[in-house]
Amino acid sequence: MTISIGDTLPDADMSVMGENGPEIVKLSDKLAGRKVVVFGLPGAFTGPCSTIHIPSFIRTAEQFKAKGVEEIICIAVNDPFVLKAWGEATGATAAGITLLGDADASFTKALGMEFTAKPIGLVDRSNRYAAVIENGVVTAVNVDEPGVCDVSTGEQLLAAI
Image (cartoon, rainbow, N blue to C red; front, side):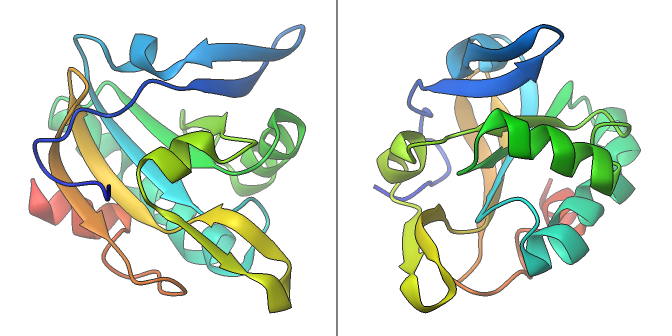
């Protein structure tokens, strides 16, 4: 499977850093009855993820809210400790972007979005994508080619809705 318009996202247990440490949240609970943006990327502190992808959603957060988006969720194949530090370092946390960890890549694999680039140390990581999800169903989606960060940016997804 690869993520497409009309798909219902599979449920998954995701990790997030809570006030008292790591917590597990059900993705379905975040999506039920809501309009959200979900975007996936290879990992925290990696080049284009930090310089292009996450900044694009920080820049467009208010515009998405104006279009009825209740939450912007970034999913990365990382643990919640790394995602917390990355969110603070990039300003994503301050911008209200939720960073969820798919530590074992099970969600990413269920979407058919995994890729591996062993020469640079990336194994079972997420390809870049961005989607609008309404009550768990994909209503708009942009997927980049592996190694590219172009069509899955906040600006490109905003233009698609």
